Amino acid sequence: MARAPLAALSTMLNRTSHRTRPLPALELAARPRPWLRALGLTAVVLAGAWLGLLIVGNVRAPVGPMDTTMALRPSLHGGTKINVSPLGALTLDSHVAPVRLDVNVDQLDPLRSQALVDHPERISGLQQEVSRDVEHGTLDLAVRSCVAVVSGATALGLAVYRRPRRALAAGGLALTLLAASGASAYATWNPESVLEPRFSGLLSSAPSVVGNARSIVTEFDVYQKELARLVTNVTKLYDVTSTLPAYRPDPSTIRVLHVSDIHLNPAAWKIIGSLVKQYQVDVIVDSGDTMDHGTAAENGFLDPIRDLGVPYVWVRGNHDSRTTQHYLERMRNVRVLDDGRARTVAGLRFAGIGDPQFTPDRSAAPGGEASERLAGDRLASALRDQRTAGSPVDVAVAHEPTAARETDGEVPLVLCGHLHHEGTELLPYGTRLRREGSTGGSGLRAVERQYPAPIEASILYFDRDSRRLQAWDAIKLGGLGLTTAEVSRHLADENRPGGPDASHSPSPGSTDGSRSPSPGSTGASRSPSPRSTGPSRSPAPAASATSP
Image 1: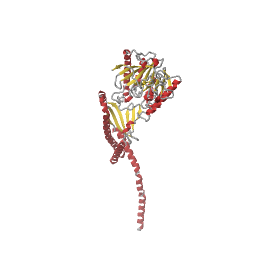
Image 2: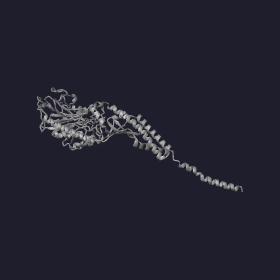
Image 3: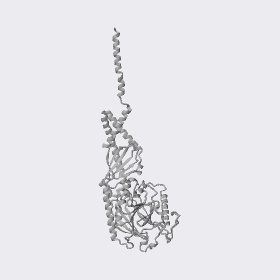
Image 4: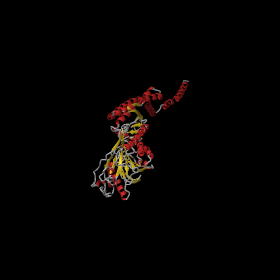
């Protein structure tokens, strides 16, 4: 009898044990795996930190005369991006970290900008002022970013986990990640990155931004019209008051407008259009650097050339790419000169060569001078071939003066640019070199010096029968923000009072005082002719009309 209760108790225990055995296994299965928990926490931290930066991570800071907005943004590669609306943006490889510094240039402060205009001597200290402002803005941004990432990660952690401890852990981890990113940025900081920016849009490299960045397009339109009106008025004034008796351009004279180094300045097209109408220009010659970086994004800047109404002769400068050249070759009124090929335009025969260098970052490539001389020799050889074939060239065009000088003795006139200031030389073998200044006022680099760079162009007058240069008008406008203009007339030697007759002017192949070397010779082996006047000659006295 005693065994029956014991058997019943054993059976009961066995059933209970059978029911409760799976419970420990079920409890273990309900626990999430550790790596999933870590992955979820990381996602919460990153999302919360990013939201915090978006909402409260921006800092408005004055930088020199500009009002800017600074912010940190998640990034795989780091770096700094500076947005200048609507001109575009530039990117600097300033550091390697999972955060990128974004700087948005909102506008120029009118009071601070006017102070720089009234006191130009302050520009010399502007660089130090900007450096201090950027340093203060970055410190404020660092503090605000710490608060933003901690607040964002903590708030999102509390919303997801509903546990204060987990939320604080998320905030602490976000702060740790931001500190690690800052340490990485500090360790990899590259101050030289400012010398090698990557540009997008139509933004050109410049140490300062001139004009309200948000309304610069419409303001520039007003500025263009004012400059065009100024050119018109000064031209009329010059025609009325000129007392030069030695040379008056005949209506049948071939008139050539020489421009150069526009450098993406949209004001140049208004000025060029005004000069074409006022001087009844037959053809425009552009000796290069129309662009600034030669990117496809800049090509739209060239579209106004189609509406100028006259042929446009162009050679490639060291800031113009092959992409730029191909875009211009598709325009009906453009004649691209390269490799010494000759084209007859408006009664004159032109030949030119593109710049062998492409240096939009303004770097000085080793051997650059030698490559320019080699390009000039190629152009000189092509000129000799044209003369031998019985179709001599009237005007040669190159971008750099170094290349242009190699054509001495092969052509009456060679045009160039590059140096951003005009000048004229009579080379040893009788070729006249005419160097144009910057028709774009050096582009957005116009304010690098104490005073804005002037806008320069020239009207060249050619005799229709002899196709020789008779005179030229040098036109100079005040740079950005200035309202001055000057038109000065210069006479070729044969048209100066008491000067030699036009029939004795140096020309390729002539034997009366301008020795032409043999076809196989180069510029390095030439010796001056008996009548040579030296490497250069001052231009003829100029009469000028100036408008305040």
